[in-house]
Length: 142
Image 1 (spheres, rainbow, N blue to C red):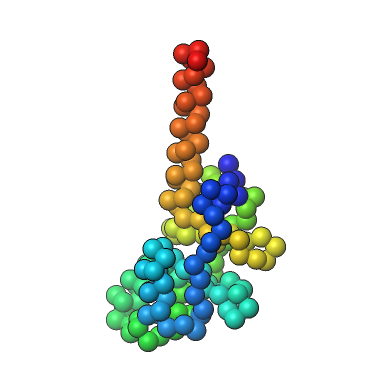
Image 2 (image 1 turned 180 degrees about the horizontal axis):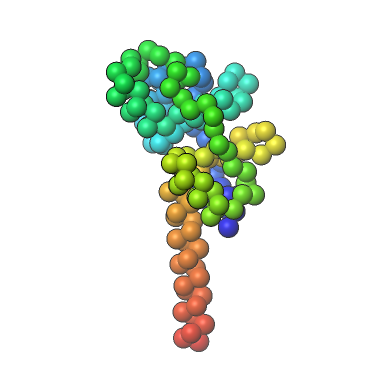
């Protein structure tokens, strides 16, 4: 299964925040969109980072003033990305090994979606359920 299969079901909407926006605004966007991460973009909507709930928690634990600092101060700037053609199993392996849960999807330098580890687990479970139903039909003859 490919990432594009997940995006076809999930959609391609991506919640974004600008790097210079205050972290307080980024936190409000996480709540507004009910998501665990935001893709950080510059003025030209080019990906420059990602910020997750974990980034907020770590900054707060360090005693940083997370309400006045810019998003760029705590975002992850070295972002691993996927393409729509990437295999879900290999992407899941990378996410598990590197310990992150949200992955922007890029195609030809353009942001075309985002997937979470939960999206991928759900897609694989759906695939397995379909295979089980097919096998049961074959075994029972109908």
